[in-house]
Image (cartoon, rainbow, N blue to C red; front, top):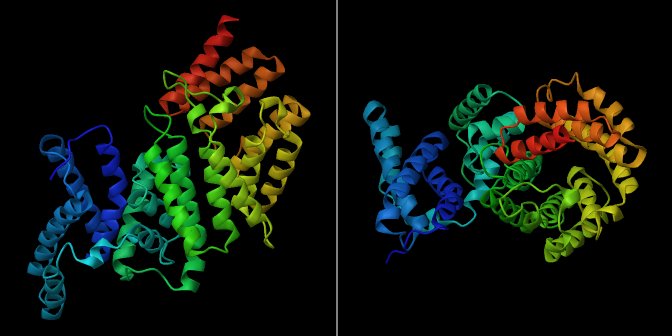
Length: 414
């Protein structure tokens, strides 16, 4: 029995994609070919489901179609290989049942995460590959997250696929020590998937709820797998404390509403309570890490009933600690904002000067957007207008661009 195609069907397809990829990659032991097969299955679904209806078991349907594509691929490989032992090994794959219990493992996506973060890959390649295969991000979106050109990211992902194929990585959850070695990269991947879902870096939508929900779901699984790891708990807390503001981030026309203008009665108090509880338990452990500190900053914002109640001195202190634990250009950028809120915009603008020579932020719109905001707070509307326009021209997110252009137009009319 099929179900009619409706507004939620496209989201279902996106959510199923990494699960199907995990099942097919585990069965055929070829990540690159499996990704191509899953892409073909998705195209087939987009073509058939609106016309014929959504299958009763959409995940099984996608796996079957992808497995048929992989079967054709394997047969082609067998045909060109001469060694009988390899032929026998590949032929055994073809005789298995597509809908076997092994293919329906609900944790395939989690296994795929760890496989993509194999030590055979550099950390940046592992993260990029996982964002593509598990997160469903486009190459352009991943390039934006890494602050590199799209062509560079395309080459990086292609090389990572070939490395995975050549390594013969077994498709299974790694042993405890292997998990520990790969965990930082896995957590970084989950963080980037959530970030892209919460604030899409490219295209017409401000948010991609499918990505944000999938990141939270996977992090919950990770928390169940590693219940005593404070950084896993910190990451889940950060996601929940940030996601809690989702309903207040856009207006009736889907326009962006910044944090200081949001209706805080729309914030999800259940998510905030769970996030604070997770964070409190994590902070009671011996070490304080990157995600716990970011979650603590999010908690300070969420606990303020009004924007004027925000404890900016505490946020500034947390950013100063974060700069020591995990220095980076985005941390410096946010630290400058916090410093401006405590010591005045001139202090923030001075701190931003250190980023002008950082190649990772060269040409990035956020630096100009923050600079414009601080110039406006100083009363220098001419400089603010200039940087709002530069930032609007540089961003690839249409909601961000519209917001920045609105700010520029407001100042131009004054």
